[in-house]
Figure 1: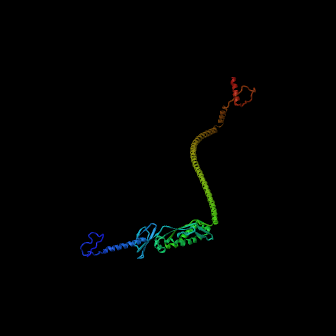
Figure 2 (figure 1 turned 60 degrees about the vertical axis):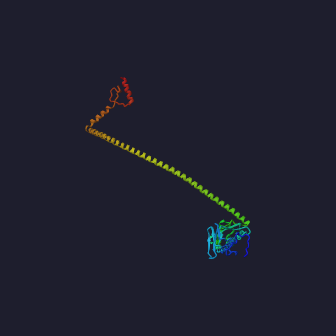
Figure 3 (figure 1 turned 135 degrees about the vertical axis):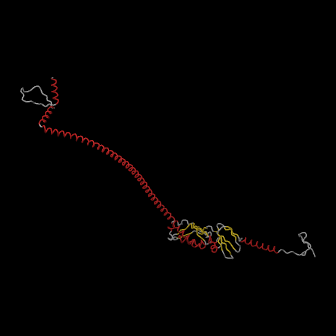
Length: 392
């Protein structure tokens, strides 16, 4: 047997002795199988990495996804954000953007599916108007993610044609129902905007798309019509200003009337207060006068009663006096009646005794036949008395 030295063989190789000495050694089958599996997995991983299908996908807050099982045909809508695990080539997860999208109608060129030329509308009176910039905000309905996947395909397929296919015709229909004058009214084109939103939703919701808002600026007309609108606006502003001025005058008049009424009410309250105070004062004076009158009446009544008592007593005294005098007169009359001429003479003598006679010591007739009496005044009598006394 011939021995061959191999460069690089470890020392002592091949081992001496043994049954298989000098025969080639085969690799371990288990190791070979493991190597094949590893190679296969490496190839599959490389293919998955190349296609992006690694079995894990991250669903963000602004996304919603659909998990599809190709074996069973089942689908699942995923609305919660986070990492989703699936089996490659058997299952797949399709994320979709659920954030609000903008469909713009402005300019004169188509820039992309969500940016088309401006909207021009013919009004029902034959005039034309347009919107410089019109924005339609829309988004997918998260619960309709499977429907969107079937109708529009994965990723951003829903953004390509659905809104663009219906927006222009529906907006022209709704805004074209009005005349140019009517559509210039904000309330009118607000109603058209709402109607357009409702009609678009009727068409797009079956495809999982919902119109959130249609944002329209004021419509634009040709220069002549714009000037007429501006003139009309100025006239309307003047009318509104005059109406506001009229309302202001009415309010000022009402305020003046209210102020006047308030002042009159205050004056009336003051007068009523004065009258009330005067009435109370007069009532108090009347009460005082009545008390004074009652006191005076009571005093006069007491005086009258006292005077009455005195008068009665005096009358009784006078009655007694006059009664006694009358009785004396009656007695005298009876005495006169009884004594007759003697009483008369006594009375005559008594009367004559009260008469003073003055006699002069001369006589006119030496042989007087009669006696004369001269009644003089008291002064003459005093003079005569003086003369007589002086003569003594």
